[in-house]
Length: 210
Image (cartoon, rainbow, N blue to C red; front, side, top):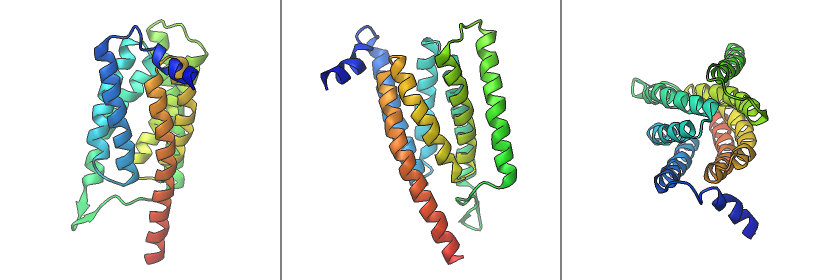
């Protein structure tokens, strides 16, 4: 057990205090954001924006360009999602929870591939030495990019993608020494599973009452 604590804490021995504080703030707001998403609560977006903006900075100073670009995208997409989730028609929520259509699945595949290509090109542009963790980063970028778009559309499948991406990211961040963020993604995975169950139950109940 002490080895586990040492693994997470050793990475912060030489880290500036302000950086540790920022990562802790991002940790709290990130978990809050996923919790609100599970509840289909609009607060998912303001809390998520705080988390992603801080994370963009932390990843930038650590030169994790792929993840940095994804979190910047999260911040922008959160603004769209915030607007889309808050839309109403005749005092009724305009965007209900639903499943992806065949067309949306194709768009999702396209976004996944396009994001991987762009992320890879970003590494090349900065003349960054690409190693195995970076290739993993390229794949998770594609997964999370698509998941964020599905979430903004309130598609059930967003949770499936979050779960897959989170499970890949947990060991990736641990390997990079970002122990707090690794733990955060472990909690994300648990919440994403709960989110999938909650949204699927809501969707099934909606079909039964329709």
